[in-house]
Length: 99
Image (cartoon, rainbow, N blue to C red; front, side, top):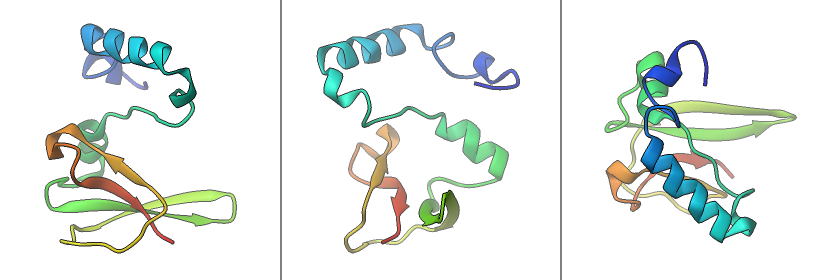
């Protein structure tokens, strides 16, 4: 985390949550390299994005990963990846990757 963010979110703030997450990764080590955790509310606040109305769309440009926010769409076709979020009950993506 950066620049005082660890006072808002992260392992130092949500100790019990991260302890449980690490235990799950210990139980399923093959999943450790497949997933990451980010602080979506903090990122959204810094970017001025409303995650209820907007979603991130990620595209690849050479060796760069570019993420832009667009109005949420009711339905999307096939995508290469999805980042889920608990506030959405794991049923909707907060970030899509374009094909």
